[in-house]
Image 1 (tube, rainbow, N blue to C red):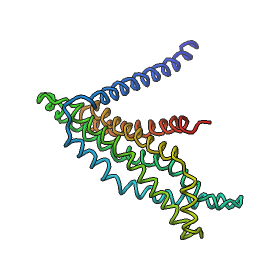
Image 2 (cartoon, rainbow, N blue to C red):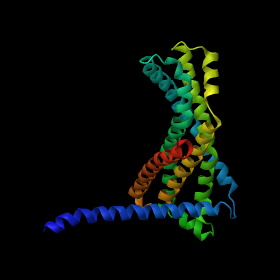
Image 3 (tube, rainbow, N blue to C red):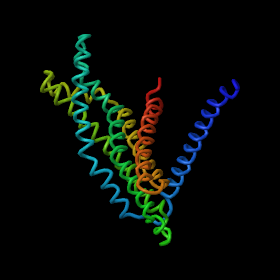
Amino acid sequence: MSARLITKPLAAIGRSVLQLLAAIGRIAIFAASVISHFFRPPFYLKELLQSILNIGYFSLPVVGLTALFTGGALALQIYAGGARFSAEAVVPQIVAIGMVRELGPVLVGLMIAARVTSSIAAEIATMKVTEQIDALVTLSTNPMKYLAVPRVLAALITVPLLVGIGDIIGIMGGFIVATQSLGFNAATYLHNTANFLEPLDIISSLVKGAVFGGIAATMGCYYGMNSGRGAQGVGRATKGAVEAAAVLILAANFLLTGVFFSV
C-alpha cells in the first residue's frame, strides 16, 4: 500500500510530462509545416495583405497607448528610485534601454497575443466547427496554405514594425513625463537617449518582435485547427492559444536576452 502511495503521484507527474512533451512535439511539427509552405505555391496574396492589415494596422492604437503609458510610468519610477541615490540623471538612459531591450518587445508581444492570437484561434476554430475547413479541402485548397501561412507570415512582417513603433512611443512617453513633470531639459534628454542606445539594442528588439509575432500567430493557427467541437471547443481553443502564446513569448524573451546580452 505504501509503495502505491509513492508511485501514484510519480506516475501522475510522469503522465503530465509526457503529455507536455507530446504537445511541444505537435506544435513544433505544425510550425515546421507552416514554414515549409512559405516557399511553395500557391501564394494567397490577398489573404496575406488582409492579415497584414488586421495584425499590423489595427493593432497600432492598443500598442501605441500601451507603450506611451508604460514609458511615462517607467520614467516616474526610475526618477523616484534614482532620487534615493542622487542618480535622477539616469532617467533617459534607463527608459531608453528598458523600453528597447525588454518592455517594448514584451508588451507588444503580449498585446498581440491578447488581441491577434485570440482572434485567429476563434476564427479558425469557428471555421472548423462549421466545417468550412472541410469545404476548403473539397475545393482542393490546402487549409495550411490558405489559413495559417498568410497569418504567420503577416505577423513576422508586422510585429517587428509594431515593436519599433512601440519603442519610439514609449521613449517619447518617458520624454514627455521627464520634461513636463520632472524638470529635465528636452535637448539634453534626447541627446542622452540617442548616445546611450547601441545598434545591438535595436536589432535585439526587432528580432524579438519577429519571434514573438511568429509565436503568437502560430499558436492561434495551431489551437484553432485543433479545436474541439461546439462553442466550448472554440472557447477552449481560444483560451489555450492565448495562454500558450503568452508563456512562450516570455520564455523566448528570456532565451533571446541571454543570446544577445550574455556576459
